[in-house]
Length: 104
Image (cartoon, rainbow, N blue to C red):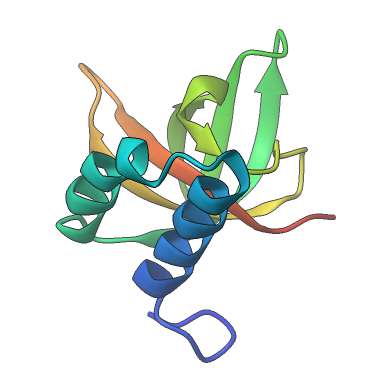
């Protein structure tokens, strides 16, 4: 899958690199980069956010749970386009990490 002609993994790494430079903590981000590099990425849209803490991303007709603590970079709003990896969350799939690629 490509997003605006770029592979989703490259976009995630670009966001992580930018955060590391902004906060001047490049070594703190290295473990995240290594973990993210191994996972498939999916593109979806934030369907809802509840209690300002968690919500659901819809992708290919399926809901994926996410917690705002799993978001890197800008905070999503309903309708934001996001890239994410997903994992078994104990009954439902859970998105982590989540990166906003386009706001509403």
